[in-house]
Image (cartoon, rainbow, N blue to C red; front, top):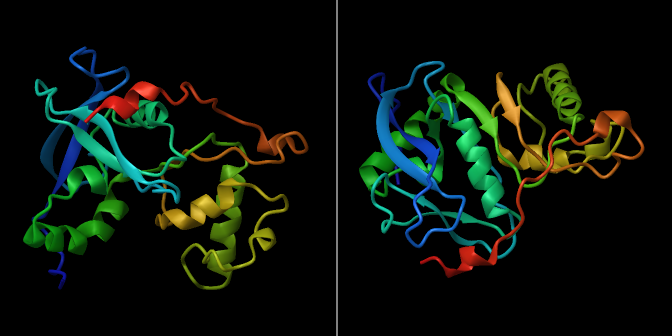
Length: 226
């Protein structure tokens, strides 16, 4: 499929998310998801790159359009994700402005897909960015990102190194956040809110302490939707 050139009048389809309190065949939590089109302008939305994960990927129900609880909206995610945590994090990120996320916002139409692909770089360079990962974030994330940016600038790459590079050469203590950062493919820009996996050296290094604890655990009732 060929990609159309980027367009100055391109409008991004974004999702307005809210936690929903309807009880019709839906467990808590779940979202109302309203789609809208907005100009691609700084500060108007948050773009969310994320890790799909590797194991038992399946279509997970996360919500429905406002007033249409029978229309199930799903995301394809690996079993590493805790569904309730994904929903809470999306609701938090979308509290002040809508989000752009490929699974929710790219329509399944070849011509529209071509146009969006041509504008993805503009979307990530213009909107705020929140990188979504499974697990808990730790305080060392900012240190790792700074090390990566400094190394990339020093080598003239202007990008985050590939996963094939030596992980331990970029950070003094191995952190489980590191490979997840590399896998997301997010662009080197600010602001960037990072949600990630807690590292395995938290007991040894104060910079690796957890800064957020999971609010929910897997609920079997999610397996009974759709």
